[in-house]
Length: 380
Image 1 (tube, rainbow, N blue to C red):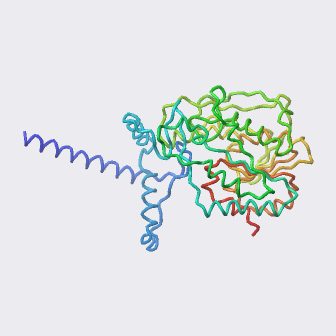
Image 2 (cartoon, rainbow, N blue to C red):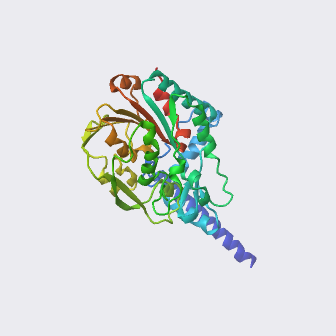
Image 3 (spheres, one colour):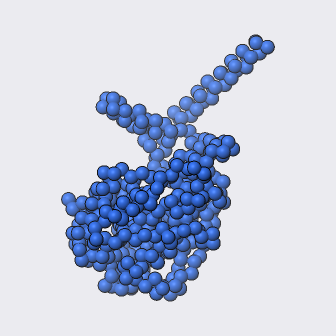
C-alpha cells in the first residue's frame, strides 16, 4: 500500500512538472498580444528592467501584471476559474459582482482625494475662463450604486453617492450639477443598464437626457423617437472582465427621431465624414456598443440644420456615445471631445468654436479613475 502511494505521488509530481513545462513552453512560443478583444482592453507589455524599478518594487508588480495578461489561453482559464467559483458560492471576480437577475455589477471605484480635487478645480477654472458659456456636469452613477438591491448580500461596496456628492458640493456656482440617479432606478420593462456591460442602455441615456434638458433650456418633448433593437447578442466588458458568461446576450437599441434631421459627422483626426451616428459593421464584432459612433475618438464634430445659434462642447467618456444623438436635434454644432485620447490644444478649440453650452458627461467610475481631464483643461 505504501509503495502504491509512493507511485501515485510520484506520478502526480511528474504530471505536474509536465503540465508546468508545457505551459511554460507555450507561453514562450506564443507572441505577446497587445489587445484583448474578449476583455476589450489593452494588455500589459513586458516591462523594461531597471535598477530603480527593481529596487522600488515597480518592476516586480509590472512583471506580474504582464505575465497574468499574457498567460496562454487566458480567457479559457478565467472562465474555468469563475465557473468553479460559482459552484462553491463565490460571486466576485476581478472587480465584478455576480448579482440577482444575472446582473454583473462593477465594484465602485474609490477616488484619490488629490486627483479628485485637481479634476474639480480644473472644471471650475475652465468654466471661469469662459463665463459666457452655460456649463453643466453629469456624473452617471454605476449600476452597483443604482441597483444596490441586486448586489450579493453583504457585498462591501463603497458609497458612490458620497463621492458624487463631493463633486456636486465642490463645483462653483457657474457650473450646474445634473443629478440623474432618480431617472435610472430599476425598470423591469426598460432596463437602464446592461447586464453584461458597464454602460447604461440607450433607454437610460434617454431618461437622463430628460433630466438634463431643462438645465440647457431644451424642450425634451420637441422630438419623438421610435426605439429599434439592433442586436440581442451583446456580451459586454463585465462578462469578459469577470469570466461570468451565464447571461443571455443583452439587447442594444437605437432611438431614431420620427422626423429625421440631416447630420454630418466628422471624425476630425481620422479625417472621415459620415451622415449617421451609427456604425453598423460594429454589430459584427464583440464590443457591439461601438455601434454608437464606431467607438471612442479624440474629437468628433456634428453639424446639422438644427438651431445655428446653439453650439455645444461635450467633454465625455464612452457613456456619451449613445447620449449625443439626443442632443443633436437642438444644436447646430456639437463637438465631442474625449480627454483620454485628445492631444490637441483645447484653448485653440475654444477660440474657434464659439460655444454657447458646455457639458461634462462621464460615468462616475471612469471620472474618479481617469486623470486625463485636468491635463486637457489646463490652459498651458
